[in-house]
Length: 139
Image (cartoon, rainbow, N blue to C red; front, side):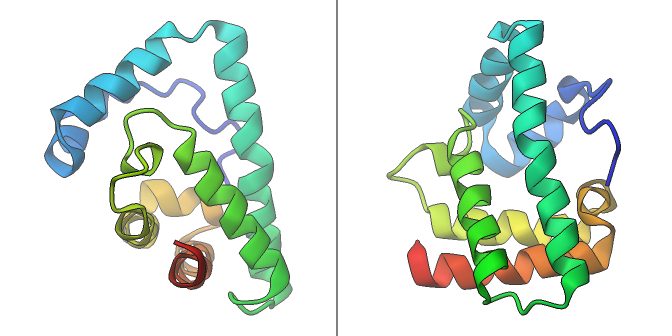
C-alpha cells in the first residue's frame, strides 16, 4: 500500500479520464468538493481511507474467503466510503450503485495505480471478489 496515499496527488491530471468514464458532471462535483475542503478536511478524508486499505491488505493475506465475515464488513465500509464521495454514481441513490461498485472493483485489478493500494493485483483481486459478493447480496 502506498504509505502516504494521495500525498501530492493532483486529481486534475485525471480529468480527461474521469470525464470519459463518468461524465463531466461527475468530475465537476468531485473537483468542487475537493477544492472546497480545507487542509484538515483533506487530512481527515485521507485518514478515513487508510485503515480501510490496511484492512483489505490484512484480510487478503489472512486467507479468508471473500464471502466471509471480515471481508464482507470491509466491503460494507468500502461501499459506505464510496457513497460519501460527491460526484460518484455511488453518491446518487438513483444511480446503478451495484454496477458502479463492480466496475470500480474491476478497475482496481486492471489499473496498477489502484492495485498498489491493496498490496498489488492479488490484493486488488481479493477486494474485487469481496465487493462482488457484497454487491450481489446487498446492492
